[in-house]
Image (tube, rainbow, N blue to C red):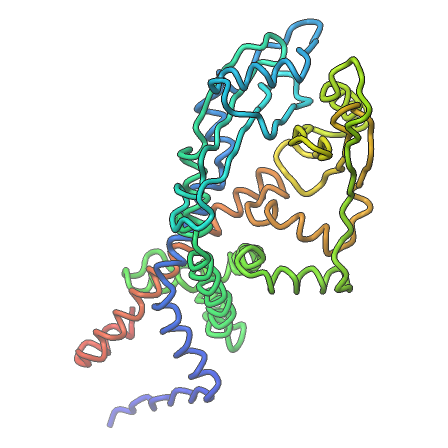
Length: 404
């Protein structure tokens, strides 16, 4: 008489594990479309700088003369305003220490603050690129409808100006954080035997589609979990004020808001030189280690001129700030990066962490692939659920599927 191999009983899951599995399934289904949307838009935006510079290479990069002498900033600003028709004032600009880059001059005016859609909330948002050596305008762009700007706002709030847009994004992101954690619990191997190791860390590409899909959901999800958590948590900083405040308090170990520099221009004092140019020249001498200098002209009254020296050609977190009198160009106040507390510094890093730019090109590559895999998780997860659902309806094929 042939001996039959005794059937091993499956280990019964704990109630906590069953609840976690159930929530992972249904919360994943509920938030799947939003997570897919965030992953895809995140992928597209990851290399926006590289793509933009490739497409507009002739407009972004200029020939450098031997003397490298640039035209006065006030003159370049006037040129940019003329290129915009003479009716729009430049509200911000960026100059670069890289000698072959055109300088950027932008103007922005808010639209209806109660508008439901993003496009109605902006009156205009334009950008002008100028060769700083010749004063030639190389590009005039309507950034209200710029491709990557739209992608960014789709990622931010579905192009919805109403708070409900970010609420949908925010709560779906919180669900995604739970899915990552519960997915890790479900993935965690009971022991590190070779069979379990291969199942948990490798994709069995030669298997049938169902097994490959299962591995792509579990294995790829494991490899990008930390990066996806980073992307999700930094996204929550923008979605919820309470979350941002919590991050600040935990990092700063204080509930006291950071002190911001204050200064007022004195209209009773004037100089013969152009104060804006004087302020810019002082900023250049002060920000010797800056990769680019951002300038914001004063808006009249007693408001100051703002000058920001950024360390890094693309990042925004590491900067010093100067405030100048708009009538004399005199330096009124300064705040250095080194003076910021841990909470202020961490919040300042949030954008650069979220897009991966804080680690340069390697960080952006990691953010790209993590976003791509995050977008795939709702799809592979749905296929796993759908396969199990069909299996229950057709138990006759259960034995065959068990050997996939």
